[in-house]
Length: 211
Image (cartoon, rainbow, N blue to C red; front, side):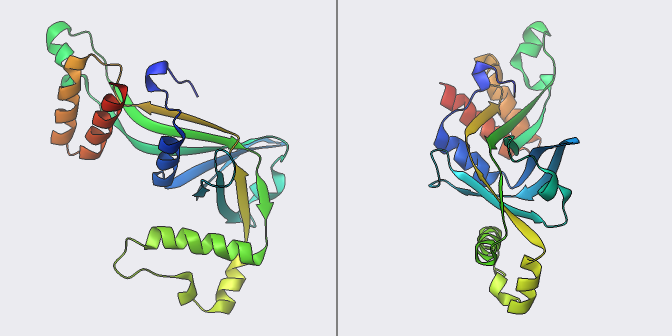
């Protein structure tokens, strides 16, 4: 990933936090026929290895399970907050008109050797943890144990676990840090007016981190 110095993020705690908030990930692996990708939620275990380990599962019928070249590192892509930035938000526009549109975004790339596993207890643990993570904010969380045990065991036989000890992490936080200071307030205020308080908050946070 091309990362200009102004957008580089290499703090492990910040990268881990972005991964946790990233939701759906894209798992890219090499096969004899070229690159293949699957989209799946992944758990981060920050204590497993120097940079943490990603864990999740794929459908057993997914060709990526049998065709992946385990000797080649996998890449996992996480996306954070993103959105279009209009030149109309820049104070510089009124001063010089020398402005163009851009797109702000957060992207994390994790690399590591992918291991598959099909131990039933380990799979149940992964499925349970994933479910608990995304059900916990709900008023009445659903639990894996709510389903009949024999049904759950049957579902587990249809999936394969994936584990990726992270060997390398890249983080790109492109949030207008490279714009002149005079443009920052206009970007934040404009995004809030457009209903993008989430993106405005990320811009403000990135600018503050650079200061």
